[in-house]
Image (tube, rainbow, N blue to C red; front, side, top):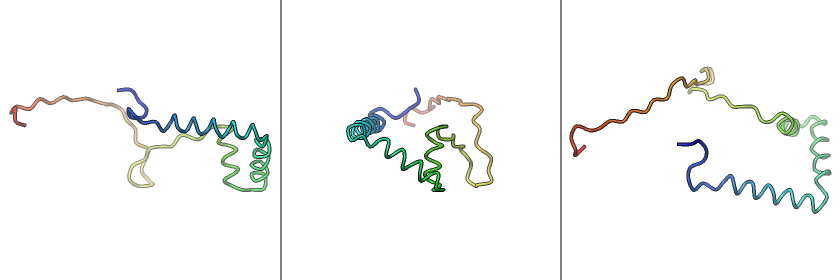
Length: 93
């Protein structure tokens, strides 16, 4: 089975459509530059959310580690994936 969203999941295509609509609307209104200026002004003013957004756009979002149940647990490392097919001895099982 390939990775990705389950069959029938259309969330990614909806997000792309909304992103395109937003981009088109901003371009129509010529406010794209004003939004970027506002974001940079907030970031330079010390707004941590704006700073994070700027760096996420420049460097990409950091990869998230998959950790165990506690904060002190090390990230989970998958070393082997095994598929076992079991045939029941009793046909009624």
